[in-house]
Amino acid sequence: MSEVRSSGRRAEKARETRRRMVEAARSLFTEQGYGATTLQHVADRAGVAVQTIYFTFGNKRSLLKELVDVTIAGDDEPVATMDRPWFRAALAAGTAEEALRAHVGGTRAVLERMAAIDEMVCVACATDPEVAALWPKEDDPRLTVQAAAAGALVGKPGARPGVSAERARDVLYGLLSTELYLLFVRDRGWTPQEWERWAFETLRSQLCGD
Image 1 (tube, one colour):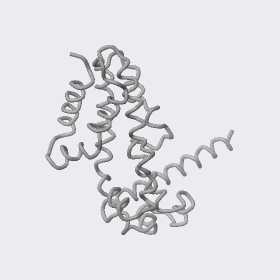
Image 2 (tube, rainbow, N blue to C red):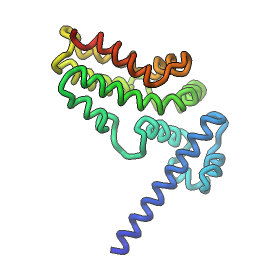
Image 3 (cartoon, rainbow, N blue to C red):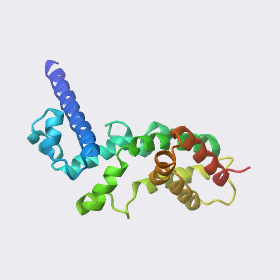
Image 4 (cartoon, helix red, strand yellow):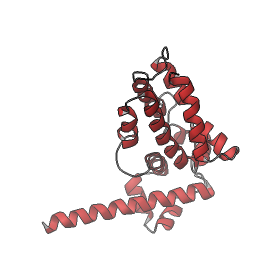
């Protein structure tokens, strides 16, 4: 029994160390840029040996990938977006309007978190082809998520007649993009709540019946 407890403590300690490294990377990548940050910088900020970062992540690109994944998810649990409670709630909603409201609310939370690192990630992708290859354009997970949401929404009571799943997918993909969110919230000074209301009302007019 003591061996089990000891193993559990070691696992939790390793997980906490991993979190510290990811959060140190978040701070440094956003403060001084991905390219200007070395793994030694991250190690110093996290209070670990640089060998620990290499052992855990292998390289700086993998550390960045984990940072993005954790930011999208909101935690470090190994649960995909489409298995997250907010997304499952949207799929299970009784009407198209309820599904849309839940989906927009959940997406807003993701976009709020991503807004802080989006510029840094875009610059890293633009200047490092190996970083850009982490998110190939032909395999866009965001499109997959919106396709699943759209497929569920168009089959619910209250969905606008004649709107196909493909059309709904594209509308969700466009209006719920990071770029459009940042245009309103960062560039035009909207609050996230204002953006959420606008996005929901706009999407409701497109995807829900009168």
